[in-house]
Length: 407
Image 1 (spheres, rainbow, N blue to C red):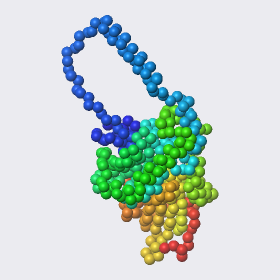
Image 2: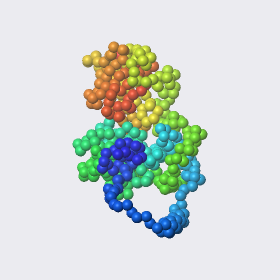
Image 3: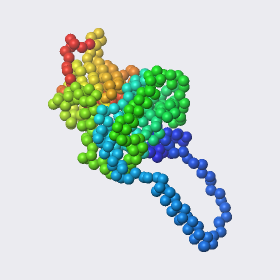
């Protein structure tokens, strides 16, 4: 059985797809065919009469439909799109279409099977990081920053990829109309315990979600738009109209968003360092140093930074412990909204090819660090934690330290 929205294989009895969060269509009870004797042929006049009746009924239905159901025209869709672009930046990525709020707080998203809003929400991140740990979230565009709000269902969804006591948790949903939570564990819907509700309400999770959605709807009203207007936009319309001069490049949008959020200092450090080239940042890390064409240099103590250009900024520190003489690496990864995604620490052990290996006891996985003249590369070895892959990339050397300043 497969999800009709995203195509992911799902198990029998699941009601929501853990990949895209869309409700799965329930199978209707189909009776086995009953074997009967072949029916006798009806008289020709009867067939003609039945045909006339069917035509009349169909004509009446069409008239009623035209009076009661007004389908949005392409001009109506275009009017909504034009209004959206007065206060958002539009772009396309991986077959999805986004209208990003100018303040960088949300992104209206259209996929082939769903329409939802991605909200940046620190309360969501802080609440569930405390509950399940930093690596609990599913690695998708929604979970990186907060929650997704389904326009059709009036429901907020937070996506996970974590094993808990009752099984594998993939979704926590909150219905704004019913004010009720629901959990998806091992593909089945579960009602939350009183302990769970008390915990999330300690953070004011429901109030925070409702406040974000209310602010979104209020902004729509200022531009004479409603949720129903947004639902009128068809995915195929965006697909046919999303031409280069309609959408900004994503790099420009992300840069503007970072400026709004106060991250311009990090952005400037990336753009003003002449030693950082596109070729360096696009090297495939899943190869040896010789295949990468990287000339490794001795370990350089200091601070490093890496911005993945999408949703995370990393800060790395390399030094050594004076008591043991061991070299260490600390990497702190932060989302654009200011929430911590993961913190990695490990002892650096030199390999034969000049690179270094560091293992995390907490995450039970390792990374490979290769030092070059202008910074360092981080490669993630096989890991089941999606958040680990935020660490992978090229880090620019911001400042080097003398031996007397480290340890």
